Length: 196
Image (cartoon, rainbow, N blue to C red; front, side, top):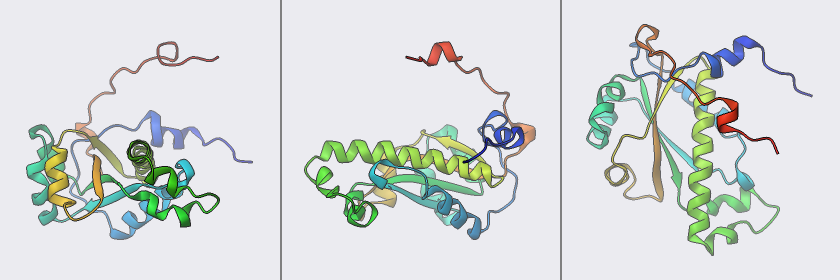
């Protein structure tokens, strides 16, 4: 049986965590990026489909390649972040299902329905992106997720010769706590939830 995390852990993962847009000049070791993925990959996805794909951009060359794809409001925070992750999905994720989910002919569920394949890839790569945010926070990093970019241009720039497609972008690093915004309001339980 597992036990509840203590308040300090919950603060780090959720209640005191913020979206960051300003970053300290501190690099992230490649070993930490490997550790991040090792945590993400064990997160649950439907039929263990694992469609998420991740491009960790840490070099200046990579950032310059990404820059023209960004909305103007996201350029400064992305260029200064130690790492920007292209959280993507593989359109043909189902090719791995014979290994990832050997209990059924799960591949046929998706090869016969492009709509189901797309919905499953988007839904589950979004889950995996959320796992990446939680994993980064658990390892002492800060994050800033973004949807302000040109997906067509990004896909052409990074994925023109693959079956990968962008879902969203995520800056990760060590946030400058002096420049973080106050937490914005959230909906309360009665506004967002039902118990039936």
